Image (cartoon, rainbow, N blue to C red; front, side):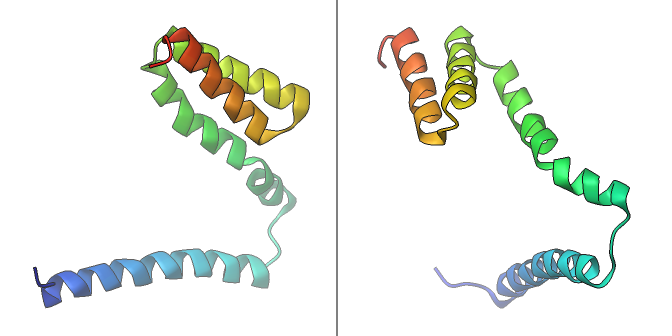
Amino acid sequence: MALRPDVLAVILGMAAVTYLCRAGGYAVLRALRPPRFVAALLRHLPGPLFVAYVAPAMAAQDAAAWAGAAAVLAVQAATRNLAAAIAAGVAAVALLRGGS
């Protein structure tokens, strides 16, 4: 299967736009000092973004998945060990779903 020149041009164009968007943000924040409000917003933004991605997926899950999420939160809060938290969540879901 050959790659058509127009498809290659579109792929390269999208890659360039993606890079320029990311690099442009870094360049602007490097050249201009953002206001304190914007700096605080950027510092706290990852948490809400994560919740925005996870909440719709969790809404469609069963009780075993919710128990696994609760296990992840509990182990992460208690140990601050991400690997242990993930293992606890996977184990909880596997146990509640019968190991399948």
